[in-house]
Length: 198
Image (tube, rainbow, N blue to C red; front, side, top):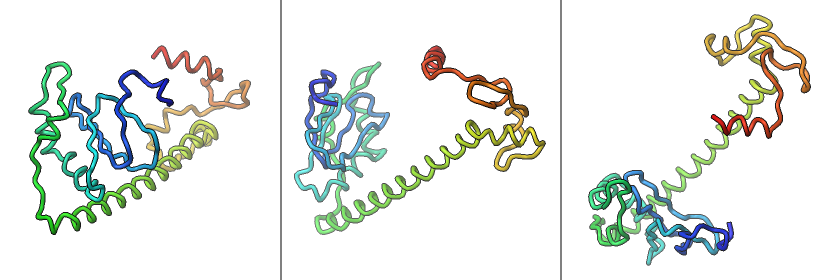
């Protein structure tokens, strides 16, 4: 969204390579590395921003400040009962361990390569899962394959008998054509209203 439309707390300027960490409830581990190319980014003041003086060590710093040990430190120093919060100084003044200088560059390069590999694998996996979910949805709720299988008295591949038994075994006519018996066709507006009440 544009800055003028953003909430009043969206005032912290951030850039590519910055690490943002939520200052509220640090136990929830709400952090991110802004590793994408976007200009004029602003974050909430509810985040602390870590900007690297040497961008080549971004991945190393990110790996350190997102460890369980560092999170435990933030939880210990957080103040407040209902909304425990930390100050930016709780992060900037925290002690962390670093390898010898001659090892830093190699270690950072290795960590960066591993993160990029993980990101690539996750993106490919998400795409695969999205396609799989679309196929299942189409099969179950558009083509009604489990209902057709029940009508013919056949097992539906990939469904347990208990799940398959949840689908009806007959069709009936509707405004949309033949649909599973007991189903109904409603407008999107009515669907959203109905879901809003649950």
